[in-house]
Image (cartoon, rainbow, N blue to C red; front, side, top):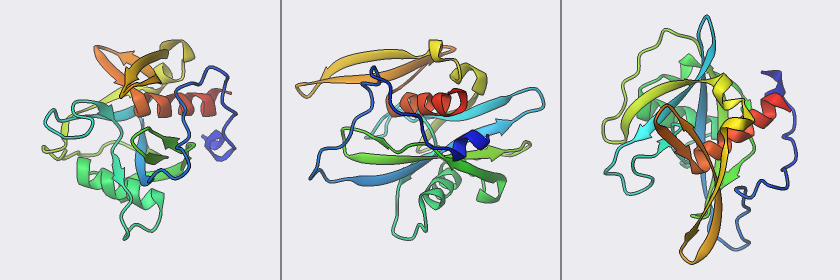
Length: 189
């Protein structure tokens, strides 16, 4: 995991899913926790599925996280606070390992992914308003570049690119898949 302390590898020419927010755009800072769970036989990634009634990103697979608040001392503090609010997982249960490159999305969010290490056993108490389901997936699956798909679509008159990674009947896409791809590149390059 020491690889998380080194600089991120440069973007590849086909990394069309990576965008840079235009100058003058209102930026909303956010942070998420990329939780790695250490089991005796493997490491897994803890993911959530958002509830279907939410106004933003309803039903999508995501990491716990959200907007930076003025009371947050750092992006790490934001990620830990949001994880505690969404999953009931106390910050003392998470050992921080480092950050992935910030990930910007067309809606104006700049998301800082913070990687954390969690040792079982732990109890989760998901917020039923925000979290439909919580599940783990093997880290090894996300470290295989062949599992990622590059996709594109038209949105609000613009051509957009995004990453996707199907996993056991679930469709992980957009920012979450893009951040997982960054993790893959950080740990395998």
